[in-house]
Length: 259
Length: 303
Image (cartoon, rainbow over all chains, first blue to last red; front, side):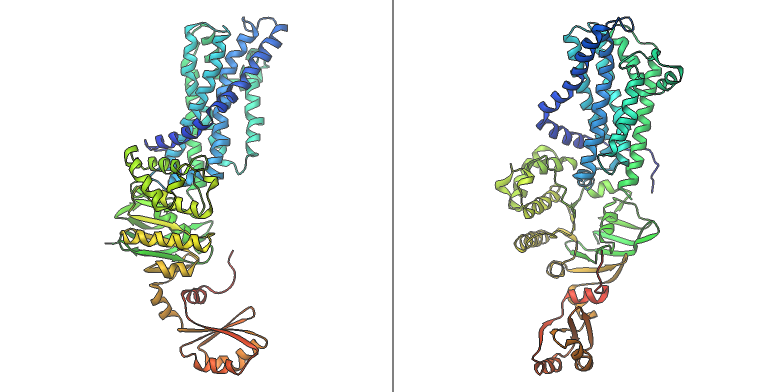
């Protein structure tokens, strides 16, 4: 079995993506509200509440500082959630993937479709927060539009990592480990809520290898109207995580489903 | 020219041979059955034919297309009715067919023409807008069959197409399968129902422990493996009767629970003996495929 060969998806991934879109369209309003409510509460609650008693953070009001972190973490959350809970339902509970793979669609196509789909949904999440940021006047630089271009990459990265976790899961509880042991600590360490410089050296080193901190390092300057430093490095790290996750998810799912 | 040619297929999991050297070929328009107890390797054989798993040895060609090498191309001309229901619960009946047709790269116009015909075929013409949860087991099965036909396939693979259905629903499925055969489609089905196999299959193989034990038409298999008459006997003292009187009169005597099965070419002496034993009740019937199956695979439970 060519377990370890690189993924070779085809354009047949498109109808699988369209399938997910059709399901989503039936629940779109609830889904968008859900995507919007949680990060909005954080921005308003923490940003204005906590921000009122804080001096400026990183040279800007706290709510402005936090907003950039929320765009990234919200995009991450949506992509991760979709690639874990929803993909697991389709793969394991509803057996939708089995039906799809009886048609001329390979597992590689299904994996790509799930990644692109999770990334698509996460772009909507990121966009929703951006709209709030613009509406509240927290960013009025044209550079902030570039954040929208960044969200598909953030989405793909975390979708690929999430789908690798899904490949190992046998029930929904399994995802709690990933959320509590990986994603929550990552949010704390990646400069979402406070500057990474606050952290002890050890944690700063750890933050430097986490994908979310590279996303934040790109998004925050753009929202503040500055061109980020080390753009290629940050993009490269996100791309590397996305590629590694895509490959890992494909191999693990082949092992699980095609034996 | 065979539309399915499988040669010496082998597949093992964790050192266990699930498929251990299976060869068969199916002619165009034929209905071919794979029978066997649970765990005999039927479903794995189907998965190998579809290119959903790679064989450890051997080869499969569907319509001269090598599988799994070009499985995507081969599956474009194949329909599949899986054992477990995997209709899309988020969609209506029509949406299920529409979305599935897109996986084959069919355009909306072709699908627009085909879907009403398939709904008609499945007896679901008035249920196009219904949600999947509102359908009965039989309707879901018919929809799954219609879904397998969305690409107008040359071969339809079915894994236990009528398991879990009531007799009415089962007969309707059989009717539809015969209709497909009359249209020239090739069918391959796995089943536990001997009656189903006898009615539908021109040829079949009985499988156990990953191997074919025998292959042929239902009639051939009965003639080859078993005596033509069966007398099933039960009642007080049946075991004693079996030892003393039935043994010399029948070609074979089998005991299962409280029942004795006597297989014979000439049933008259057995029936004469039973006429004198009023406490014994019996059923005399012609031998069936089920008798062949039980003889070849044994009577003990498989889980």
